[in-house]
Image (cartoon, rainbow, N blue to C red; front, side, top):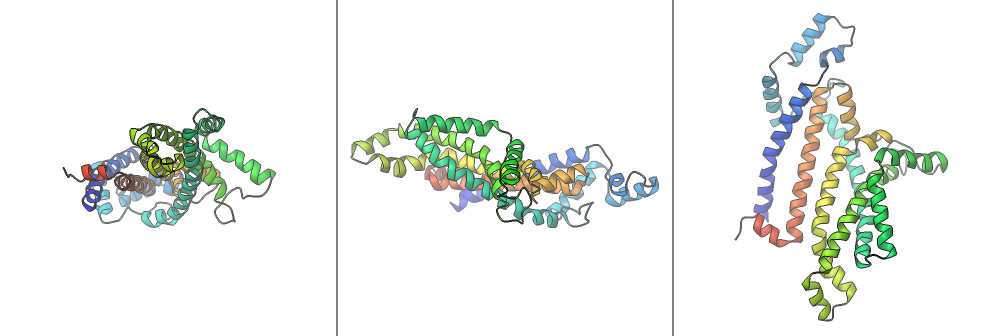
Length: 311
């Protein structure tokens, strides 16, 4: 198992190098002058040129990238143009908010989707199955920002029982978690249903039933574990999505998270902060994928044996 984990960890290195290069060059070629943004449109050209030289913006782009990578390898992602604070410090100031939101969203999705997916498969073509699939289709079709605004109108403005934004008031996590979790719920439900349908038709399930194993026990103890393998993939991918794609919901609910920080950094042309946030988000997604591989190996030992290089 340790060899399998080390192998998966080493595979992250070329991925992160490629992502860092892509992000850096895209941001470096983006229109606008960060020095002019910092000093303002009325700044003297001499002051703008001096700041560009101080920030290293006059160096060739390859030199800028080499300097950035050297700093990144030493844990230095630069300083934010806006606040002057280190990018790592800025990122981890907002990281707990996004992590809390991601965990809350995943709990909403898992608690709702797994039981509905199992019931839809066990009672295929029943009313429960039809309602579950209609709900899944609706969840996939509704944009997050629209759902968030509707939830604010209903529970904050009309009923007044939940806060409309921020992260300090009691219950402030509920609406953004439901907003993000709804789309993930729909996806996980569909995958859970199809995987369970495929699993319950396998020969070993019929054999277990023929030996006298009850229907409920055959589902929970024999079919569920194998059916969870593709579901684990979706859950880990969606958890990574919370770091990369939760910016819309964070803006709608004024949630202090990494997604909102990244959007603000891009809009203000705070290049070090924007690049650092995007690279750290890529790292979180890679870590999520590595956790997915490890969970694969725990659920299905055959994957561990093959992935670890054993014959």
